[in-house]
Image (cartoon, rainbow, N blue to C red; front, side):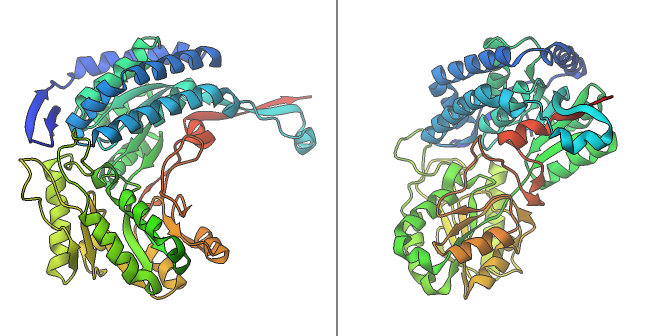
Length: 465
């Protein structure tokens, strides 16, 4: 993929960028390593002051960066503004709490006295330079949710962003610099994916984090494993949205949330609900209302306030989605709505919100992630079947469950194979809560105290008699 801004609403190439050459990459790695030697010695007060300054800049420039994100990957302007606001809020959250989250931990002296210690404690120390390989779908948030905790922990960052959001990537590199962070603390590398291996193998780079496809995760993890370097991976998801009979009392809200959960970010979210698993007792009522609501969504120009769903980010992304839908239809699935490109829109990578039923395990869409506004709808006879179908996936990022039955809730918490279980509400990431998955959705955690500690050397300090 060339490094370029291509407007997905029109297919027009707006601006292209030259990739950094080897000398440019070397200069940035050297600057990052030099910065890491001094930044690790900075105090939390200094880090917090600069992080809040970056958040203030982001708030002031919210509309500008929102337009850039919409231009580059097609999310609605309202969604882009909300993303920028969430980033600024999370930056302040870490600025206020990092010192406490990384405070020394002192075990009870009685627990360590038999080791011969006069005293012992645990300290969290930064690892150094961290390479961040980030995707285009939340081009600001995905980066900030790594950068804010990493910088507050005393690490420095090198950002290799997706090649179709170069202006957002450059904005992020400049944001922290303009806020006053020392030279080299956070830098954007405009390079293709082919450059990642060499960067990660550089001995000055201590670790890596990646959000993206399973294939990209495998590639980065393989190199990091060979170099014995820490990685955190947040990969794909095919999250279940389970609706049980007790949700019938508030079925309209469940349907409303289901629609938002499926088409948020034009359906291009790892934690978007994708598989809708509904108990037979309420399946027909849910299916009718869900299909009607999906059909009513307005597809169009993402800069228009009335638009609900904009274009997919890339032409290839739409082609991949169409292949999944066509494969399902050819094997007997039924489209309750959508399953086509809109006819009345100008050129662009649009796809109608779609609901498929009659999906079987033989169909690709049952196994693969549908990255776009396509929902698969399943009928199940009971709780056991709901749990089994929810777990019938190689992914395990998060999950939604609609039930007010406490016994059912306990069962889902115990048995769902996912990094999160959200009851009677939509899955979302929040700085106070750990985020990540199991199985082929990756490993490690972002956000919360768990996320800020991922790229720390957890050091035992022991004093003998």
